[in-house]
Length: 150
Image (cartoon, rainbow, N blue to C red; front, side, top):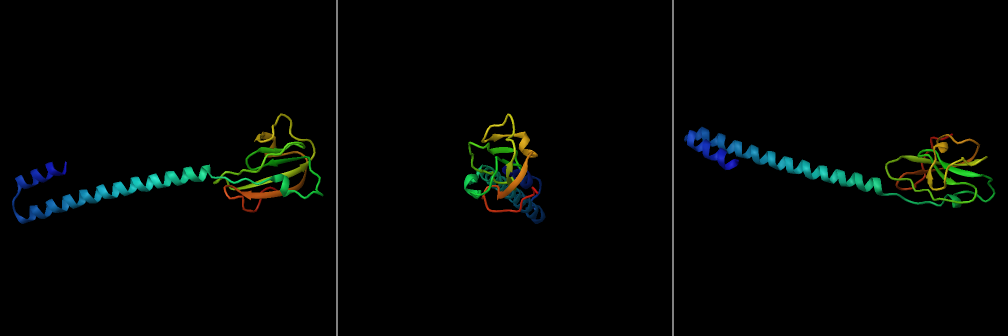
């Protein structure tokens, strides 16, 4: 394409002003190509970064987060409704990156019916029972964060 443009430019005018226009057009096309290449590369870097952040996660034992003197019957993640303890079986907290601060709520009362530990549980969005304790962990890092559950 650049060579075809160059050929037609030289054939239609031969004075200094046309030569300057010819150089400007080639510089513009080269700059456009370079800018497009940079945008594609940046887009690939952003996509890769998003994929990495969505996949990265940490793991924390919720059993070890509770004091031995506290009485609770089950534990729910209320941020992404998930059952982590049903009175017998535990599942660690594994909040994925990019999902914000997760509230792991330790409750007394009946464990939600029809839910399995380590699985999604719609009843954990607004669990019934009395709140005993809340452990708040940031998605992806498991650092302490400010819970939204009160």
